[in-house]
Structure formats: C-alpha cells, structure tokens
Image (cartoon, rainbow, N blue to C red; front, side, top):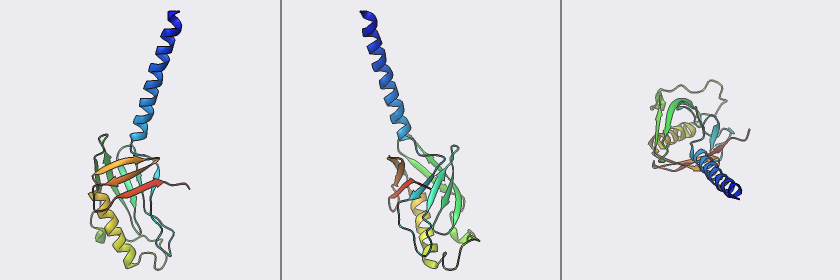
Length: 147
C-alpha cells in the first residue's frame, strides 16, 4: 500500500518540477526568432520593424529603413540593457535595395525615434510568445513573425 502512495507523491513532485520549468521557459526572452513590432506598416512599403536576438546576446534591429546590429541583455528579474553598434543613425548607410520613397524623411525620423525607444528601454516582460519593452520613452510590443 505504501508504493501507490509514494508513486502518487513522486508524480505530484515531478509535475510540479515540470510546471516550474515550463514557467521558467515562458519567462525567457524570445531568442533566435524574428519579433515584429506591433505597428502598422508605413506606406508605400510593407516593412514593419523587427528585432532578432541570438543566443549569445547579439541582436539585429530592422528599423523602418535601416538595419543595424546591437546587443540585448535581458535579465531574469525583468531588467534589460539594449545597445546599438550605430547609435547615431545619421552615420548609418541607407539600404541599397529600397525603392523610391521607401526611406522618406518621415521614415528616417521614425528610425531615430524607434532606436531611441529601444535603447532607452530598461524593462521587459513576456507577452504570450512575444515581448514588451518598457521603461523608455514609449512602450514597445513585439510579436513573433508568422512568415
């Protein structure tokens, strides 16, 4: 009779460990996948800004016009450090493969504003499969790309 009771206790313990592990994974910053900014595209382009975080912390920020490299260092306590290799976008070259009007003055200004919001963000939280960055001039929500 003790064996079924012990087995039940073991199963409960294992289920608790499994649930805790699943919660811990859910709290991790999404890595190795493209996350799209929760925003409508600026016409005439269909491009929406995105970020991708590699396992080693290297990041790619695809803004409204430009793409730049940087780092994202999320911590388990919800704190965050975001840095860009090219903090002054005036120094970054415009993409070669953009059509006429795709990198308008409005889009270039939006790049500057978005990069500032990214690099000033200092908190993050998981939102389903996506992530929200806060603590900067504006909250930014990213969701997984579906393409």
